[in-house]
Length: 445
Ligand code: NDP
Ligand code: 2IT
View 1 (cartoon, helix red, strand yellow):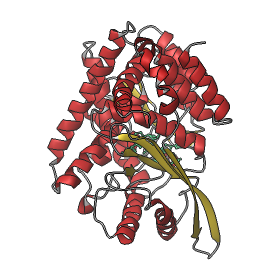
View 2 (cartoon, rainbow, N blue to C red; view 1 turned 45 degrees about the horizontal axis):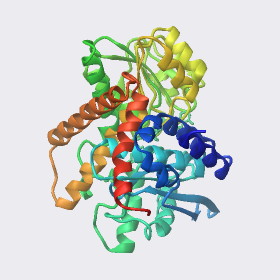
View 3 (spheres, rainbow, N blue to C red; view 1 turned 180 degrees about the horizontal axis):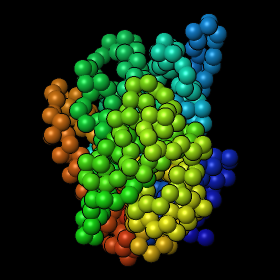
View 4 (cartoon, rainbow, N blue to C red; view 1 turned 180 degrees about the vertical axis):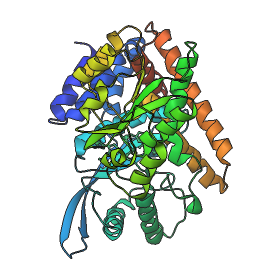
């Protein structure tokens, strides 16, 4: 049994039942074999055992009172996974499906993603099983304040800098920041994705979706094609999905479908994004509404059917494991040419295998393709430390450069080890090399 296989087996035994964490670790570790073989000193230093064990895991109680005076208790999490190359950095997710396994898979992915950005940020993730859907503004504020009443003692601008993720957007970051500032009496860059009036960065809101499409555009350019007139599926209708759609449309592509956790809309004339923004960003409503407002659009209950719509490009931007083997096969059978992941781990291991075995399908994995969000968070941190603001053009230009660089870095890393075009390997290896070097330099810590 190789060192990598041994670490993976031990990880599964020592973290029983953490299926998403096992999945992410399996995908990552098995691709690192060539690097591990080139560095026998890593095994002696138990580097992979340390890399897959979070530096610190914080679990806490979050009690809050609803509008009827009833008391609720949710679970709070912050996994400070790896600080070898910078302070822990990663989002907070509020969703009923959140558990330790989900936060650990996201944290592990985040270490390598953050390394790929080329910026000095380590990996962390947190959140709660709180469900923001249907809650009043006051209930959201009460929950965020209670969450921060514990979290504040573990985070800091040079220690751990959370941000948004599913269920945590500008409103939640605002309440979390307000409570941190009140408790600590510090106006610092301790959270990113802040509003523009209190330290946020221009383009952070758009960054993950725009960045995804910048990388896709570069991959297409290298093959002599472009998004012009391509048919595109975008799953989700949240922060990442909306701005991925916006950039695709700006570059001449046609997005024909979007979804939420209830179902999807198909609009053969091309999605009217202003309508989606009104429903999702303003009214916090359901995507079903879209079909009532736009003629020619059809709503279908359930999410999975979105992947049976013929397309050239698929951009999964909702959640983990939204594309299984069967959906991947349907996409391939219908002629998909590019799959770029906006969500974290949206493809199952089976689906990744299907995409990679299909001829002519370019697969850009999440930790590279969706790194634009956290990269721009790091740009927000830089602006906060410097006590200044950059223009939208400046941030957007930096974001684009970062995404183009990541594409070429993962392309080169895959080539270097003889796996040209395998961007899963390229991303894992390129991300890991820097973290491994830093961990070795720090000694056994
Ligand atoms: P939002 O909360 O803004 O939007 C999430 C979207 O995905 C909503 O449309 C939501 O539908 C849908 N969704 C969530 N859970 C499910 C589910 N179980 N089944 C079907 N649909 C679901 O989150 P974001 O757009 O920020 O995040 C989307 C993905 O992108 C996540 O995987 C996140 O980790 C990843 N990501 C986010 C970054 C960021 O900067 N925000 C950066 C990098 C990655 P509904 O409203 O019905 O719940
Ligand atoms: O998954 C992710 O990269 C994010 N949710 C963004 C994290 C961040 O710190 O901006």
